[in-house]
Length: 239
Ligand code: OAD
Image (cartoon, rainbow, N blue to C red):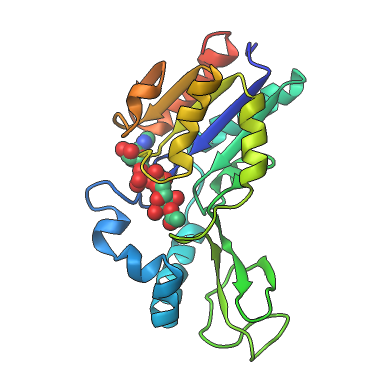
């Protein structure tokens, strides 16, 4: 049985890489092929909404064709194990995909928003959105006067649910980071906060991340094998 009462897990693009969804900063990653200034900022959207919508429409299409991999499934198994023992697991993801949910993880906190959600910048409507987003109109609430954008957090915008995330981190007794380069704040600062709080810290990543030295234990390799192996060990009483 896991010895931890409250495990806090942060995931990033690396956990979904083997599901066929691209990472951002690896060689050939999304931001080496596309301009984040043009595609992931409010200013880029104001300059050219169609270019931004096309980019996210293509990512949404890829997501709908993708499936969870064994790393997502293992975290759902760990959540069920924690719940069965009256323990807790907080899963915070920087990913805008829904692969944790499709693998069975409950209550996923999407700090960078969700690709399968829309937000009307005209009237403020927010809701589930699984099809291509049209330029001009398309808002279920205000119709042709509306302008939808994906409900994802862009550079320069405040990530979602930061108060809840801070509360959960304070209560955690194990911090785990999976598949993130540790280069985008505020998420990149969570490990330092955990260190300050004296919480043991584990990193699972293909390679050492930018802040890899802040972790007590590291597992380097593909998430699809490293995460299930680590979950098995944790459930057996290790960490
Ligand atoms: P990055 O692309 O910065 O980092 C992905 C990490 O995953 C890298 O450290 C890789 O080594 C690792 N990785 C790659 N393949 C892996 C695999 N199969 N198994 C395990 N690890 C693997 O992605 P994030 O850290 O998630 O934000 O990026 C953070 C944010 O930057 C994203 O949420 C996004 C992006 O710009 C916004 O769009 C606002």
